[in-house]
Image 1 (spheres, helix red, strand yellow):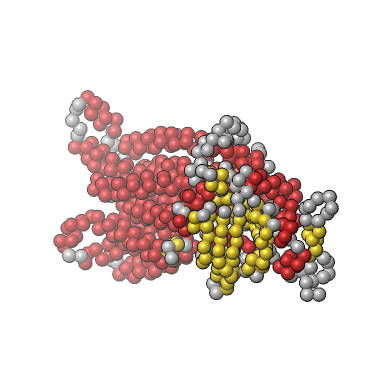
Image 2 (tube, each protein chain N blue to C red):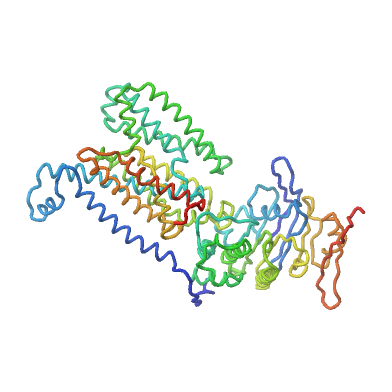
Length: 357
Length: 262
């Protein structure tokens, strides 16, 4: 179509797309700086700069430097970026799907299912045959949490889909029921658990990147990467969905395919993130909201920006969690909750017009 | 042409449309009128494939089931009675959403031109939620206009399917929008509009379909269909139509304190 090609009518307010694209660069730079800080920070006093200097001059790294930087901090950095990006993008996708800025990935049942999976592994893992425990080793909780998250999403999706149409309202209500059921089963298992298992369960629920290994990176990061990149293709569809499902369909958006894809992406990304890091809250709500305030709600730019800011914030929270009571570590879920809950409250009050800032 | 044949719609156990036949031709504004609950919006929602229906609906000779979703979006734009919006989008961002189905060229300029067409020049950067109900409705109409901007594409007419497009507008903007629709039809496109204002319908429509109690009770030109008997029977009250000698424009007057049965 060329009819309007020659028209040049100025737009009064600064085009938010330009601002959002500029934000890609700023957020990428911020992520790079935070990543370097994350690599350079830790309770052991191992210096990133000293190690880099040795690499440049060709000197050998000490075993300590190799272990701390290569085996501990680098996998933790990569896993932290992936988990942060996954939680923030999943939040933005869910909010677009439910047309509500307070929606979060928990609504598709990933959290409840993953939590139950983790509890099953922690409490009943000891009952597995020894050869199986040898095979899955330390990753039993992660596998079980991922499987639990995925399974509960599939159940919820099947329950809320009739004649090829998924009802997000049914999904929301069925999610509450499924969450309560998972909570009840978890309660039974918690009742059966011994003291050590209870301690493991509590710490899993608070979330941590302390268990980051290259093996976890290799398993989780590709899955999260695929889901996050796939979400970038949902931007235009989620924008249309802001007008309601019927209007989105009139715009030519394949609404049912969009809903299925969004749910699967969120289940995959969040499931993998929760499996390797436990329960980390608020990133999924706070990051998209801050970005909407700064650069507008256009999902085409919101989703990549959410990935960058989510990764940055989680790395930042991880640095705080490592330093605040060094040499011990505060679970990262506590840090994100302390920082995120006031912001969440602010969002609620602002929506009801109770605060104006 | 849009042809709907033997359209039946049930919502729950209640039959809303009982085998309705309806046609609309390109180059014309076709109005669907009728009392509340008669099934006129349901008929439009069946034609837009928004609700389950049985029968046959063809747009430009092709059954709507044979269109892919993006093909259908390129052939017809739909304005629902009430469209909501989640998230704080600006007016221009909402209008640009209409440009999803294969529109090329300068999209911003097209969206701005569509806003000018509905009398919203200068509103581009305003937040959609800040607008009044009537302004929001016009912004949505601009979005729909963008979607099928050229009335004819590849020698096929395109269609505007509108549910009460002027319902919450003042009289000046009602005229602006109706003239915009007339212009679209004049340039070869087709317009189907569910209308409540019979006088506005008489003024701008080329064809009128009266729907009452889930059936089409009259269809044809304004002079043929908008008559005392058909209107009084459909609306279940006494209505008088007249045509002033200085123009051929028909108008409708309700008769106070009188009912059809009286």
